[in-house]
Amino acid sequence: MAEEGQGTAVEPAPLRVWSADPVAAAPLAALLGAERLETLPETPGEAPLLILHLAPAAALARAMSGEQGPEAAVAAWRAETGALLRLHRAARRQVRLAELSAARANPAAFAALFGLPTPENPFAEPESATDAILCLLAQRLILGTPELAALAAELEAASADLTGGAGLVADDPEAAWRARADLAGGGAVAARA
Image (cartoon, rainbow, N blue to C red; front, side, top):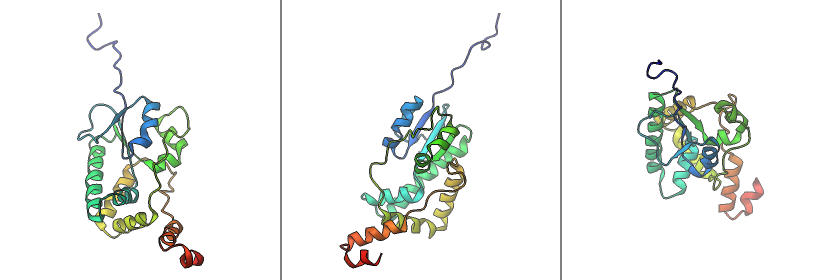
């Protein structure tokens, strides 16, 4: 007679996915049969958790493109990033972090790291392009504040390396220049470019 618990297969807990961009991660969650979380959990829980976050500058730029000013955007990003890093620290083997644009740009690396059957891109395209001027402002906010720079560095270090060590692609200064030209009416500014 088998003892209780022997010979009984225990089903692994299903994967849970939280994303800073729920629309972009919806196809991934469907592909994996994962539970999509609407809010970031306060504790790691029993099931594995994949957290897809935005790069710090992209998160701040997105917040500032809405109704938030720089101070409110920084406060919200600091709180959210602190919460996801606390989850990761509490259960490093169970909680995986990945930056969404790196995952989208490197689907084969993402597929290999997370054991997906295909390297096809499992992410929906972003709803809209991030404003290049706001991205540069966001980078300046992060790099100009030691606490924010340290938090951004910790987030990058805790996240899965999907770029082969190349790091995230920096925002395009030329795109910011063209955006400035568009705001100025295009004429003389675009001619100098």
